[in-house]
Image (cartoon, rainbow, N blue to C red; front, side, top):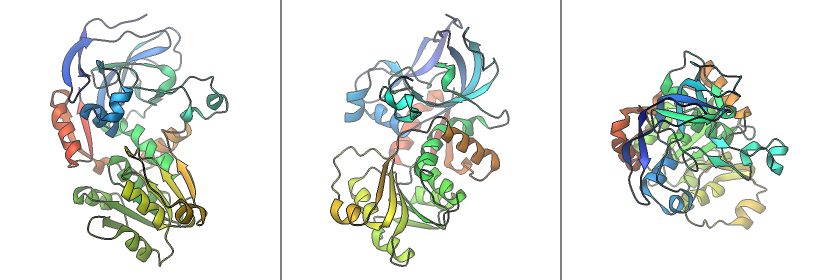
Length: 349
């Protein structure tokens, strides 16, 4: 066992209720197969907002008190005895799914759907802190010149890449329903991958403006314009080829299935909190639609795609990072997320 002596500042989900607290906690010890990372930047995810607000999902999943947060970049400061592929000083981010390696899915290379998955900052101690301890197998080495804030949002960008590129999009029309940070990344990825048209749907004018900056060819306020009618208009009445569902709203999801063309693909990353009513007969079966559930990132194919898209400049995520705050200002960050008046909020310990 290794340890850096002392304590650190961390955002702790301190009780089974709304909110969180900034506390002084012990710097984590590391096992032989782990490293200790000094966190340089950590970004707030929608999952973190669920935990902060304490909704039904978080109440059934997480067990306070613990440090939450799972998106970050940082520098390795200590290395376990069995770690050989990383060194002190390496600049890293992390794949947040901790997988078992021995279930049927893992044994066939489908690690992203491991039946025993644990998620950093959800099921284990997270990275809203000055230090985080993680298995070396989960680390991704970043280019030294990559900005720390950009490096911290590669994990959610991986979700967008997995959703968009889990099928062909070149020359096709793509609808992104829900322009939260991952939806906005999906817009940029679809454009970079050669989509002929990228339609962005949301109820938030602020985020629709960001979608335009990310390359959307059409931005549609779903509360002011009929989304299905507009999608049909833009596609000459045929419907869109690919729908990326990022909203989780039952009405929006139903609209996505109504705007998809015959033989199209619907990839669903969102997590509806209520049951969704769909016209399976007319909008899925008779259309011959391919429906995909998307979880996490393909390990580590998606990470390679993310890294190359960023390094090549084909996708610029800088416009999405709208706020930089200190760890002490975390409550402001969560307030911005709840109000939808931000892109990505990055905290700097």
